[in-house]
Image 1 (cartoon, one colour):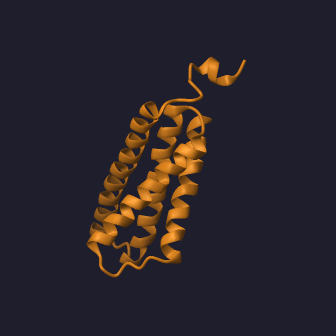
Image 2 (cartoon, rainbow, N blue to C red):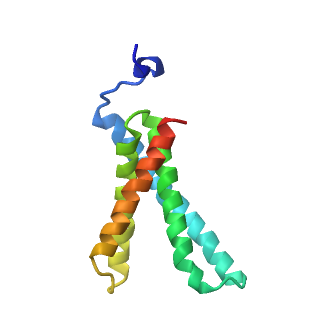
Length: 134
């Protein structure tokens, strides 16, 4: 007997079941990043933490948000966590970079851009696998 039968999960789930979970994972990751970025801004404003740490905080917060959204997605769907988590990470990064392109004129698309997209997919895949196996 396969493990999907025990869990009550259809291994070949239709898109209409997966898509809402993906959207919730992406939305949850974006919401979490907004909350954490607001908290980080307060910390930077009210403490003596140097502003040069801000890019590192944004990077860590973004990765944590991707992992959290992908973990949710993997846990809800129950299989192929690497794929669905990777999609959450990829779409999250594309949304954030797209918003950045609209707000800032000096963003260049190159290796830096591709690195961010790749890291989003990889950390999303890890979060998705974590969600399936937790």
